Image (tube, rainbow, N blue to C red; front, side, top):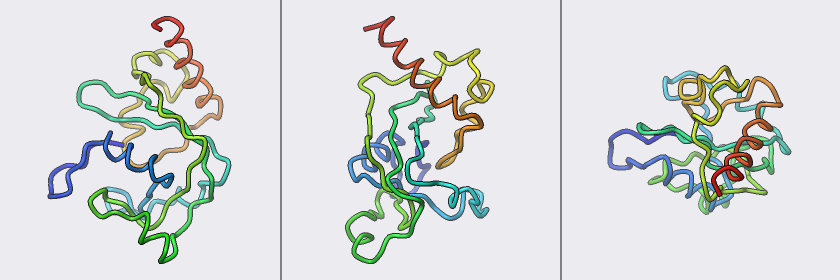
Length: 154
């Protein structure tokens, strides 16, 4: 996630992250920021593992992890009223989350330099609302590196 640019609803990426994990629902739009249909939406399935990545001008980082508690779905009217907040750029489509972990210390991207995760091209790859990791072991690499970072720098 990255900061929403301009407009009266401008939000920092970290604010969007906090809002959505507090709600337990990750809003996903049908169309990406370039107006193209996001065909990967239907590939999100209950039980999928996810990491949260923040794109920042200073230093991008991973913020935590979760498990998807639903396939990608459209909220019904009652759920929409409760979970969609215009000021947070929410959509009535997305996934429910469980086992959310907001890491007390984020994992800076530079901790993954030279590792297998997408060849280290993080910012351009992760830009947008969600991306599927090319290799399942990449999720575990991120989690392992976070644990190693905490051991090295408690």
